Picture: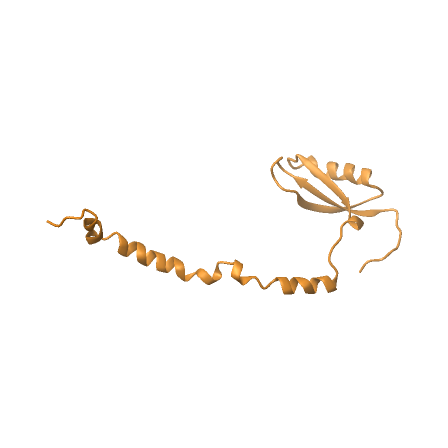
Length: 116
């Protein structure tokens, strides 16, 4: 539940990257009076303990989530079972069956084209 009550402290979310090629990960939330102080607090509480190449501090009010009405759309978009491999489980057994039959001695000898 969101309130419009104005307080001295604001909530910030802290994200960081361990390496230049890694993705950002959410680390923790903190309370601070402004974005500059939030960055200092994040650096003091996190960066001295963990190897970090970049850090983001984002005011929670700047993060937009989806509301309950929009969540209903996710249920409609969740019907993509044709994109998963669950329905193809039988293929592994079938492939193993063909692999075992393909390279038997008769098959290999038939490749030579002549019989002795």
